[in-house]
Length: 553
Image (tube, rainbow, N blue to C red; front, side, top):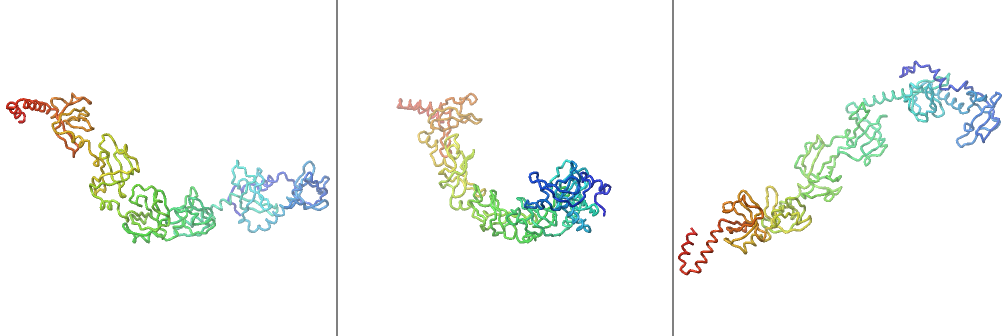
């Protein structure tokens, strides 16, 4: 017989065996007689035909219940393995081991090459290791042990393959290395067979994890990732299978470096996506069942191992949806519209809201521009507030919120507040709604117009200087504009913010919220007042009327 390890063929087995039992001198088997049992010392004295009795531990002659198998005067077969302090070293257990070893050798001498044993490493010496299994001792040379020198192997359970039986020496040699090589060769043959295209085999589920299942296929373990269980996509294997279940699988990949075998259950099944390739297209309406709900959307089942995805944005027209569970329940049957279907990539996207009435269209039917309505503030931004009216949000811009200058919507409202507004504009093309609140209140300019008229002389302070004129703050919280051409004899570059200016009102436009002033007109108005006074004092009014006529030209 040729061994896998050439180094073993060059070794002197007799020398290794002698090293394995170097403390033994003869291993002579003889019949002795128990002459004394010393319970306190846990030993028995056995006469073996020499001057001094041999000592044997009582542990060697007890049964499983702990009772002694022999009494004083009983004959007992023992093995003399040497001498210690001139007393013979004897063992009853060695006899039993030798008998079992002889029985093992006899039973397997014709077919030992296929025998694999599993035992405990009990001893280590310079030649190798002693392994005991079922009362039989096996010897494993170091070169065939496949252990690292630093490994602590005493007490370890190992498997090894029998490579030599010697009936004359009653010895058995085993090898872990040969077993590994055989296992590696056998696994390679299995993997090569599995990787052949179209090969389907039956395996047994050994372990189920959160990411898949390990399946034994002829002694080789492969991983069925949870993506490879069903065409629906990732599934929880523990909900479908139990350890020990038999499954049909197909090999889809093998990593030689990592020795990792990837298996697939779904590859064994017909691809349901091919069935819908020519039957389903974007725009179709289908009935599906909600199978799983996540914070970002819901998965829906078509009923034939095909699963589609309903994104949270496609559940409702409500932009403020927080959780799909507020609208859907697992097990619900719903009608959806197909947005996109890709049989090759196994992807299907659907929409629920596209089959629902658009809130904007319903709003446009119910309301018109100019209507005064009450809505709820849903959110606040730096530029205004969004107000929901009949399920649709409109924008209330800061400049349309209040007549108070520098005040924003977020200074007046908080989310959830109810507010009365006027629908300023409904943009059907962009589906946007503009709202106005300040139009419901009397403007400061309207209040100002009630107590002032054109040609009134007023005083204000410079608020801002622009290229085209100067803005002046008047009483009652209104601003007025003095254009550059109406500023004479003053000069804009010489004015300072806060400086007081006197001017005449030249225009009040309450609808456009505008007031215009003029400094240049002041002189004319002052002259007009003087003339009016002269006319009152002079009844002829000839001079006054003459000058007045000239001023009007």
